[in-house]
Amino acid sequence: MFFPLFLNAQFLEFGGGLGSMYYTGDLTHTVDFSQSHLAFSGVYRMNFSPELSFKLGLAYGKISGNDDKPIDVLGENRDFSFNHQLIEFSSVFEYHFLNYRDPNNVLPLAPYVFFGFGFTRITDPVPSYEDYNSTQPVLPMGAGVKYVFSKRFTITGEIGARKTWFDYLDGISDGDTYIKNYRYGNPNDNDWYFFTGIQLTYVLYKVPCPFPYVPNQSILNRIKAH
Image (tube, rainbow, N blue to C red; front, side):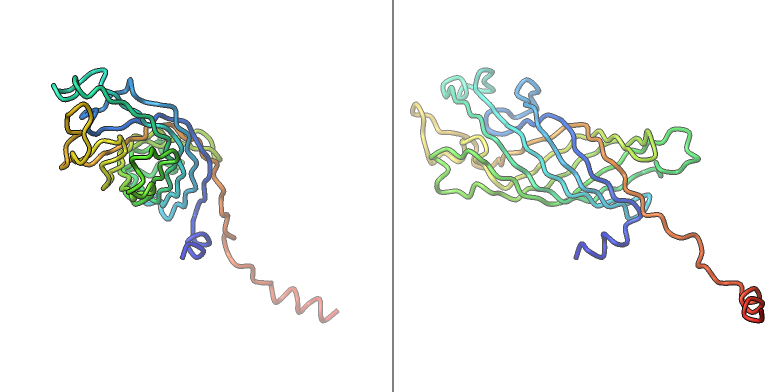
């Protein structure tokens, strides 16, 4: 399926970047940047038009959480913490609001949004995960800005959320297990994690022939005559 897309792409890009990964769930209901960790990413992008791109991504990072700043009385008594490493594969479509590659632009940048589908794998599942699959589907979504600073290189900054259908990223879920005689967490709230980062990509241009070559028949006939 991707081979024809590869051939028809106007531009191809590949590269990587650095960022941070963090989570929200039963231990942290809002984004807590103090719990963020260094993450790495790799991308392969196909640009179909000035507005639309398709990106394959690979990311590796760590998420963690604890009850050091409890959000309720349960957290004060639970005193729980976790650290997990994740590997994510994603495929997303990106929509640009401006043609950032137009040479007539004063500032070659464009905001964009993205949405897609992917999988994440917990590389170090704890024993309590034995009844659950450590590979889970996710929905990546978010926004960013692209900037072309040379003909061959593009810098991208983005922030994205990953919706899961899994409530055990933090090891706390629906109350089927107890710790210190307290129920673990909320059964109606699945976990999310986020990736914020900067990426540098190298652009491979597909340069078409501007017009088909047609030999000058009159010249050829003169050559044959001699």
